[in-house]
View 1 (cartoon, chains in turn brown, purple):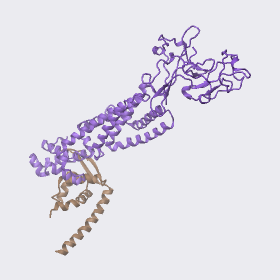
View 2 (view 1 turned 180 degrees about the vertical axis):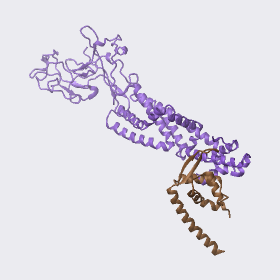
View 3 (view 1 turned 135 degrees about the horizontal axis):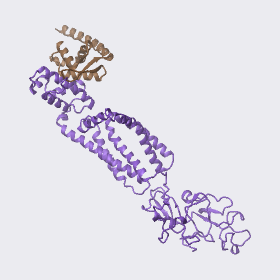
View 4 (view 1 turned 135 degrees about the vertical axis):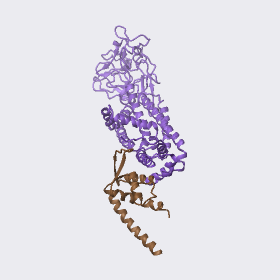
Length: 107
Length: 462
């Protein structure tokens, strides 16, 4: 099974989860996701997801000057973002439980 | 200090990605490309000197794959199959769109100037630029149909980018203050252009309700268009030509000086700068001091000579005691007919009396010349008991030939003034319906009920 297909549906939740811990810029979010074990996540997917969540009003952003290159755009969860994270977490937990039971039963 | 210059290979990669994102709204594309740039600079740093196109592609995929992934994740509309290959054609279309805007702007402006300066004329050549503007606008509408509100393809044009950069530098530079002031006038302009349209309605109709109704309608439309076009850039293709037309209208109306309402009353100029208007009947210059101006405060617009029998006279020349020919300062309204636009009355001051009237055509544009017959007939008063044949003239010395009708005013009430004056009857304004004769004035009658025998044109007493 292709993990990237699975990832598509939960990337929002993954990005929200990463940002819940600490604000981050795009590449930083990417690194943290990979560090957490999501190796297949693509650069463009993370940047695109951040952009979509921001456009949906779930994130705020601010720019921090960087010594190493272009200014970094940091993203942070706002209240709607935290609300969305809680809802998505519930959905995920329920879904994961169901899937686990299903997979366990049929094994 | 930070080094913002992207590695050339990465810069090429970015350009490729930007090309595929060019259909996005400009602001959105700019933002996402900033992120892409950061991403690229991080990857370049990661690659640590071994930056090649292949290395970049191995890490990020081809620019096309990267952009497609970005679009999918960001929720942008997917690339259409023609999106990439048809790009050049797309640029051509956008440039045609800009050309269409320019042509519509020019045509609308010319229409406005023509309409503003010519609205009282029979010449209707403003129709041509108007039709051109409408045709081009129709084509523009076809191009614009189905495009995004932000018109990203237009915003991506280099000319748009340059204009935005110029705007930004103006807003922050030395002229920030005046520019901010001008920007704050935008809403005032939205009201002003509705006023210009209302003014045009006033000049054309001369009434009150039409200008008010048209003005209100224009105001609503103007405010809607103004606020809406800020977000929906497609409406710029409507707003800019309309603005040009309104500016043209204003210029046209001011240059023609036509701010008299309704049936534009053109008093012939009475200055030395128009000597040609003051020619005598035989072509000699007419002394302006012999031009008759007003009678009891009302402009003297025509003189209707009658003979003693109450018959109208034609082609009468009047002279004063020194033999100078008498003329009129002001003639009738020409009802929007220009002097040279047919029909018109040249040198009305020096025509023989009665002068022709110019009347607007009923229900049709333009006007016609009505030969100089009085819009009323007169009845010569006679004393009771006098046989008409043997009557002595009234005190004015009218010869004793009888009129064929009995006067309508009671005998004796007529003062001895010359017959035929029509109190208040300025035919240019009351048109065929002079008010009833005031008491004590010689009787005058509207044409319908008059029984004066005369009134045959061609019967000339002099």
